[in-house]
Length: 121
Image 1 (spheres, rainbow, N blue to C red):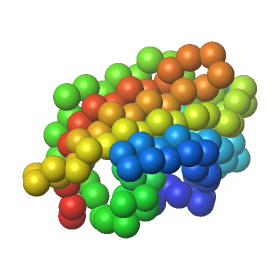
Image 2 (image 1 turned 180 degrees about the vertical axis):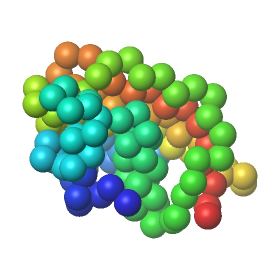
Image 3 (image 1 turned 45 degrees about the vertical axis):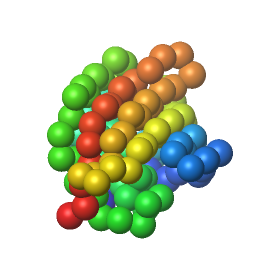
């Protein structure tokens, strides 16, 4: 789990099927020693994990990614340049799981677009 050690977040607003949040990345986390030395970049797998952890906590369910229609990394997040990002997670529960469309972005661009289905573990 990355929450609290790699990142923290606050919910800015929410409704029945949407969360808007602010995320703070820990720029001193040891993961940046290897990804990549001298040019730290938040790994894509960590971005996907952040979406899952935030949604799991919000819904109070242990979730896993069941299927994904699209996962697009559209920009890089260098914690030496910015540690603050925004997130929007739209979700819709169904009989088979929870459909999700999520976006992570910084001030200048979208970093991640994710569309998929999560199910309970």
